[in-house]
Length: 129
Image 1 (cartoon, rainbow, N blue to C red):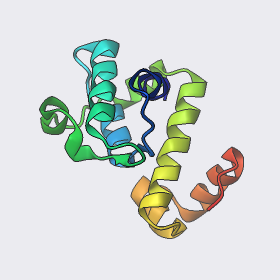
Image 2: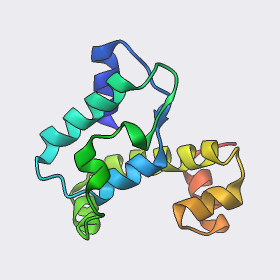
Image 3: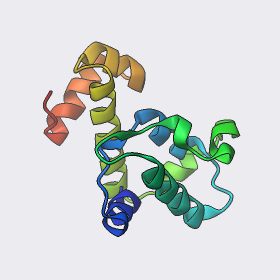
Image 4: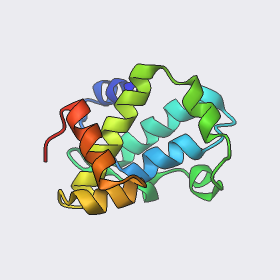
């Protein structure tokens, strides 16, 4: 995620990553403030997360936490560049595997895909447990 990398450089702080819950929320949220709002949210999350830890959902702004999932998720995905989608998908997979202690079946269930689908994506992206 480009905003995360830029923010980590500016804050001279490296977080372990963003939880799949937050990434899912990012995709589902309507973002009335557009890209600037997303950038501010990432900055807020990095600022509130200790170095080396995963950013957790409870650190999100109230607007993001209280917003119901938007039916515009498909439109948001269509607006992303292929490299951004790949990066987002890799982050989601790694986060799900981490949260499930490497258990592929539970990670796949969390991601809403089959174990075989997860295995194919892991192979495609070179993700190892």
